[in-house]
Length: 164
Image 1: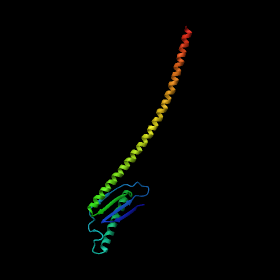
Image 2 (image 1 turned 60 degrees about the horizontal axis):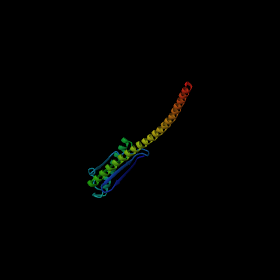
Image 3 (image 1 turned 135 degrees about the vertical axis):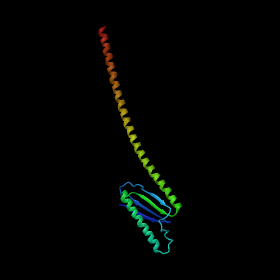
Image 4 (image 1 turned 90 degrees about the vertical axis):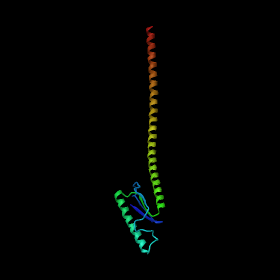
């Protein structure tokens, strides 16, 4: 199920598409443009009431088509596209998006490292069990060797006593 949301605020259009349930979302695109497409002005700065609504509807329909194309080509990934004529806001959004992408990469790296840590801890525990078992086996073999050496020594003494 693909969920698409549009939001208009401060001469900015925000479009978000979410991936299907159970899919791993992936950030595909995060581009902030400094200007709206040609002929697109701020919604409140129009000669008539119908013109901004028509332009806004046209813009939304084009964005919807783009969202559907991306979803069709890439399997409904999570992505973000922002159009704004406010350069400061665009710069801020770009930086926030880059930070979010870095956080996502760092979190995935942490998960990977935690998985490796768990695997290594399990291997250490296994090796410790092996070392304990080998230590016990060595103790048993030493006891057996000592008893064998004692038996040989006793036999040697018996032979010496019989030969005297």
